Image 1 (cartoon, helix red, strand yellow):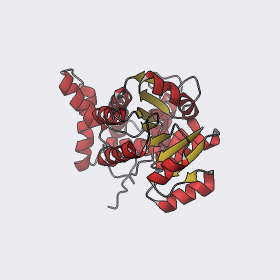
Image 2 (image 1 turned 30 degrees about the horizontal axis):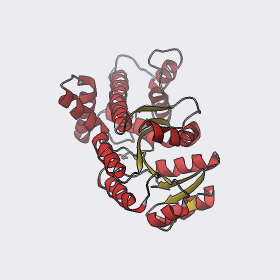
Image 3 (image 1 turned 45 degrees about the vertical axis):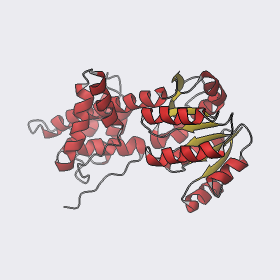
Image 4 (image 1 turned 180 degrees about the vertical axis):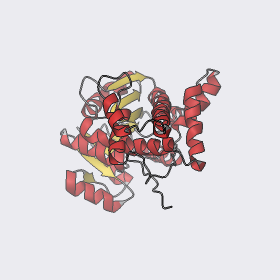
Length: 304
């Protein structure tokens, strides 16, 4: 099965590599020609000189998977593909697009007879080896057509992926997933901050985090990442307490307002990231390292 991949950064490059390992013929395109050539040499991913060249190299029906920044980069690429592709072809957006954008993209392509799938993708930099959690929105026909690709990218053919509903629902579910992620991360960071600040007890946070990983009701991958970070530096003194938000936490909070449903934990976790821009506490340093652990996000190092 042949598939095109546009956007070969941390996530896109790893996904293309995973597909190659599972026998897919992958043709890639990225504006960074050097990165594309490096990936091609290391993995056997085919290199396209342009989006049009990529489309020409694919057999019909063509499947093109996008791993691009949300907003204008994805929208402009979908618009270009609407002119290049033919009825029966399929475009997949695996980035973190807003679900309303995905609904618009799906409608635009449907007018041309081109299928569309929005694939909320979780797994970060570990997805290459462990597989990705894929929450996809599409018509039943498109979901069935992409099933072999989803099974190859997921942790196993029978788990870690699901067709959750029509176009837009995949990115909606991923948006809520990320909002929950914000809340879980904030709770862990605040708890460890309370222990770190308790002068009465000389608590070994690395030891406690490792303790909680076994049999505790709060054990999780985020706790695993916290334990790893604390083993390296139990006071996190070399990390600047600045935690970015990538957008989906904001979208989740706005969705709660629009639905008129309370989501205080998710919303406050977002506000705490805003506050971290002016904070010098322990909690945002641990949050920053958790983000780096699962997604490879950069952390800021203190220089004072």
